Length: 427
Ligand code: SF4
Ligand code: SF4
Image: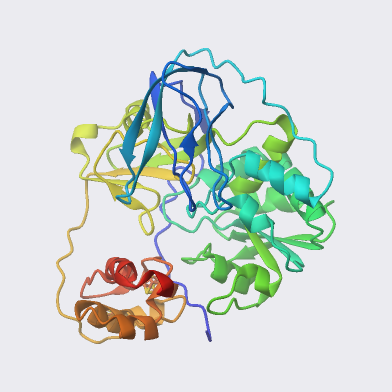
């Protein structure tokens, strides 16, 4: 890898000045047992059980799995099969909410004494990367490699999304505590908060709030996409390159999303696991765009109704940002742990694909120097060997190649399909 490209996008941060608003409690929630990388949880409650806020309702002892907790109090009405937007199936627990939000007795701040007990507690919090990837946080933090730099990823580079920005502005003390806690427990001597230059208020506030935390600096980066991509963030903050097949920990770095750090701090202070999250709700069908706090498992339709959305006008519904989010067709999808936004669009540009004109823009735009044109050709031939040589498995699905293509070729989408046909050992 020689260089790491980024592209310029319109920011469309329409909701950056919208404070976080807690929506009411819906009549019911549906909480999937698979909301992150790793094995799905098994339900540990039964139909008819009464559950409280913060109660663990699903678990699996696989290393990559994290428990699932309820964000509402009420009665379990069903444990049903649920199809994730990815097409995979898992169980989902349906809870009829009683609106009383009775707190579970187990919600107590955890007692920790060393790294092992810290990691164990992080797992119990149900925490995953809240920036979209959903990587289990305890796995990320449990490396044995020598880490010299903790990067707090505050880039939020996707257009429209402002939930991380609002979290920083509204909970800077919890972020400072989260930084101190992680760096102390993992003995990390240096902290960098990587933030884009379109978030001046947050950057100034965090500079002030972290002034007294030893060896912590705020690094303001240009607002380019995908600045928040892990490898790009590491390179732009430290100059280090995470080579193919390597992890950030191999170059002495751990990257933690800013909202993850804030909610982890809250868990260690209060014992409340990950049961709710902030969503940016925006799009031209939404009357009251904003940043809304909802229990995990709340349906998107409930969120949109409360945001005064003209649901009948929606032509495209995206869970996440426009570059990396997933288009969904069921408005009753539940909000999951890693969902940072719901975008409900009426005006969409229908792009007709035409033949490649060999301009090379997609190659120049790719942040990890792949060759999307060649990957597309190899995929059409179903040429597994060429796809492996072209390293399609390294594609981070950022969408830059598709965005810059004048022929409107669906390159990023093709890469996903190409990855899916690789033998399992090659992924
Ligand atoms: S989607 Fe994949 S191939 Fe396209 S620019 Fe991003 S990383 Fe490169
Ligand atoms: S950007 Fe589009 S037209 Fe240009 S080389 Fe890539 S695929 Fe072809």
